[in-house]
Every structure is written in structure tokens, then in C-alpha cells.
Image (cartoon, rainbow, N blue to C red; front, side, top):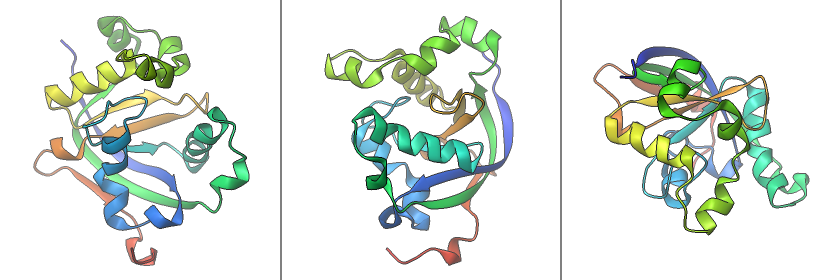
Length: 176
């Protein structure tokens, strides 16, 4: 059995100005509509990073994957998000990866987009889907774009009483 743990700290997101609203930043609606490395379409997940640098690297990885000029990603808005979660699974821990039969290398190098295109559920999406179904609030995963970084994935629909996801300095953001 995996033992979930608590997580409390500040995480970061990088997004285009049109999505830099307090609501858009914490709903996970974009990942729900399109799917992402750790979730298939239909599951809302808020992707956040351990640092602004990791957040930027993650957001630019999409552009680089599709050979879109990086300047097309600009401008970007960086936002700090405070998290207080009670039930998180940390996939950086080797015991957790062993239990799930997945290697760190597989998690960061898998071409999940090609697997989805081929009609295969990538192992990363299967893990995210299982975590969501188990009712955990989030998972901590290694960053595929920043070797020393990590991402915190939060399932907003699974937040427990007393847990929170809060955009810091939200009053400084523009209107939708």
C-alpha cells in the first residue's frame, strides 16, 4: 500500500496572460479538456512547479516539442500558488516507483503524446488516473523539462476539508 503524505508549500505556474486569472489557474480545466503527461482527457489537474524556473521550462517544453518558435510563447505570467494538502503521493520516492513498477527514466522520457495518438494510455496517465480514482489530492512527479525540478499535480475535485489551493497576490492579476 502506498502511504500518502501531507504537502505544504509554495508552487509556481507559468501561463499566457489570457489564462492568468485566479479561477483559470486553479481549476485544471485546460488539462481536463486536452489531457497532459499525467492525466487523460476528462480529469481536471492543476500542474504547478517547485520553482519559477521549472514552471518556465515546463511551459516551453510544449513549444519545443512541436518545433514552435519559443518567442511564440511570450509573454508569460508567473504566479505563485500556496498549497496545503493532506493526501499526496510522491513519485520521486524509489519505494513508490517500485510499487508502481515504473522507473524515473520512464516517467521523464516517455513520449506520452505519441502513445495517446496511437490509442495507448501512457503509463504516466494511467498513474494519474489511478491516483485520482483513489482520491488522493495530488502527486509529486519529477520534471521532464528541468532535471533538478519537480511538479506538483493537484486534483481540485479531490481536495479534502481543510486543504487549499490559493493563488498568491491574486488581486494583482488582470480581469478575465
